[in-house]
Every structure is written in structure tokens, then in C-alpha cells.
Image (cartoon, rainbow, N blue to C red; front, side, top):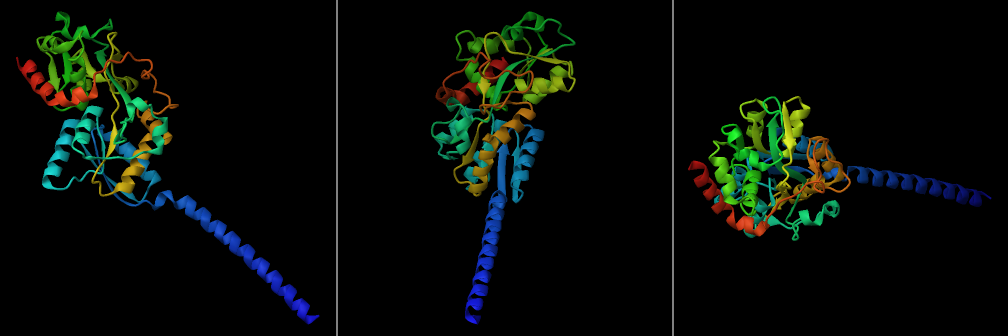
Length: 344
């Protein structure tokens, strides 16, 4: 009898112990799953041409998801960012891990020099394939058209055409970003000069109309919003953002069409912090990252995420474009020609 009682007690204890162990294992598994994302740690060097405030908000959102990753940001115009990267390469070590700058042509130049890492992000399935590098070395992150910004206090009738920049009525009242500093402006230069109805005459006519050429798109906005100029060539999101904040400006998508950049993101081939870099790319392309882009006033590139009020989606735009490879090969020659045209 005592023997059977002892066996029964031992059986009960074994069942109890197994149950506790199962609960503990389940708890540990849950903890491991919950903390998987936060295990990523280290430093990430992020180079970008985004406005300072937007870059800061992107980094802040990424840090909230990966609190153990420290992000170091370098921000300037696209041309200066690329100059820094190439100077670092000549010095023997590129510091950047992730690059996010204006246009695909810039990334094509880096790809040509074998400076980009191939990375097939799972998030890319929701990005239009034509806005993704076929070799997966870079991905578009948003849709940014260049249109006209108009001061509504000085101008009562909104223009409908790019020709307003060359009209005798607007002489001395126009402003544009420099292709020597702005990646978007460099892309626009290549696109416009390869259209039969624009060509180099478009820029020559603007030059003779006493155009003010400033460093970047932000300075164009300041000039028009402040009333110093009436018309400007500018990326669309800056105008709708300023208008929402009370500035006397209006965005116009000219009837001839607009050039569009996608502000791509890519990983440098010799990135020291590769895992963090991949996580950063995934975050930017994710639904969370694209909703953040929309909140900041950009037209998202991901399917299913709505554009901010006042901006057109790419399906609603009349887009003018040119072959990316042709633009890449001619970029430096185009910039030199622009300097000649503007100085004449």
C-alpha cells in the first residue's frame, strides 16, 4: 500500500514539474519573440539630402523600434553628400552605411562604381517594380514631382505652363535651385533638356529672364513665400507643407507635365553595420515608414498608403522622363553646360 502511495505522489510531482517547465518555456519563447527586434544594436551611419527636421523624425521613429541602435546622420545637398562619399572612398574607408538622396541617376553612378550592396528587402513587394532597381541595389522611397510655386499675394491668376518662367512679365521675379547642389534640380535639368518641347532653349530663355539661381529647393520656397520672388521651380511637398502652415503660396503642376524623383535608399557595399542598415531600409519601405512619410507631407511610394492633402499621386500626374542611363552618363556634361548658359 505504501509502495503504491509513493508511486502516486511521485507521479503527481512529475506532472506538476512538467507543467511548470512548459509554462516557463512558453514564457521564455514569448519574451524572446517580443525582444527580437530590440536585440539589434550598434551604430548606423546615415547620409541623406532630406531636410534636417525630416531626417531627424525618420531617425527618431527608427530608434523607437530599435532603441539599441545609435544613428549618426550627415545631411547636405545630394551633390555634396556624394562628394563626401567619394572623398571617403579615396581616403580608403567610406563611413556611410545607408544613403538616402534625391534621384535614381545618383544611385546609378554609385552602382556603376560597384559601391552599392545588393539587398532584397521583403518590403519591396509593395513598391511599384518600375521604381525599384532591378538588381536591388536601391529602392525609391517616395514620389516627389517638381512643379511651380507661386506667391498668391503677388500673383492673382495662377499659371498653367512652364513658359511663365520665360515670360517678359515675370522678368526678375523667378527663382530656381542649382543643379550643382540639388540632386532634384540636376535630374530635372537632364529630363527637360531631353524633351523636344523644352531642350536647352528652355534654360536659355529662363537665364535671359534674370532668374535667381539658389542653392536648394528650400531657398526657392523662402524666396517665393517671403515675396522676394513671384514664381519658382520646386519639389511639390515643400509647397503644400508651407501652405498648410499659412504661407501665401500655391503649387501648380504645369500642363506639359512634371519630372519626378523617388528619393531612393541604398546600402553601401562595404557598410560596417550591415544588419542595422538592412533594418533601416526595411523600416523606410514598411507601411509604418511610409505612413510617416505621408505624415511629413510626402507622397508615399508604397501601395495602399494615401498621399497627403494637396499632392497628386503618381497615377494622377503627367510625368515627363528620360532614360536613366542616358541621364547618368551625361550628368557632369549637363551641369557644365548649365553653368555656361546661366553665366551668359
